[in-house]
Length: 118
Image (cartoon, rainbow, N blue to C red; front, side, top):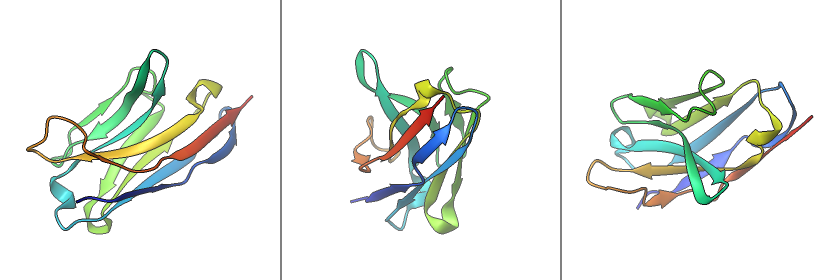
């Protein structure tokens, strides 16, 4: 079982920055793929960014060039650096984890709220 706890959300003016953190339990964190999700119109949620255990990174087009995902395996933590925030980025951001054997994202945190005002 993997437990995930997000932090770092808050209220920020458009153009500002925030860094989200997701701390994970488990001794094999380095093998997990980690992702950041947020709700999206027309679907339950969208994947914003992901990073594999091997360090491969993916971004949604809407955040490319503005968000950066990274991980620190020594701290069992994944980060999402969000720059040049816009009001459309306002959402509850949830961290998720999956293992190489899974075809979905079975482990979820409770989320952290990001509010961007203009």
